[in-house]
Image (tube, rainbow, N blue to C red; front, side, top):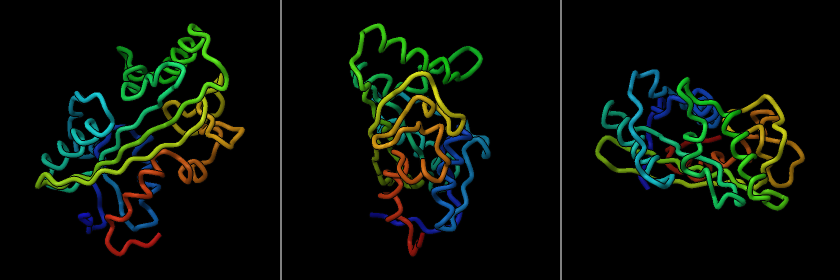
Length: 205
């Protein structure tokens, strides 16, 4: 495994909530984050039908454009009652002409479950793939997930994306009702990140 050395990491995202979550995870390791948006980079087209492929597209595009190692995350929610949808298309379900609307996406998801009379509990999982890419084309891949169920109505005002309707297994509250510290301890991104930290030379949490 190639190790990352440095104190500043380019995170290939334009999603403020995702950047904050990754920055919070990296803070104990003394690594500061700068986003692709901060660097004025365009968002590359995500043309793959899996999390690994799309994370690779974003990480390598950012690394090539800046000459810096870049970390990209591709994540989404898989709902069993919908055959794993929206999955890799999670963000697309939120897309409107005015931008992303995750309340609309969550409503669409629940209505789709109602339409097929999906049984309870309506199990689901958040999946995350992190790719750390270097300008020379090398990359390291780390995958994580957290199991749970989708619930309705939406609950909580924390987090981002589908957090208000996702209740992780073993909890009676949604991600959006959790403090960031608790969510970041058990999330799909934390699971992937727990594997990623092996890349950080001499890092101590």
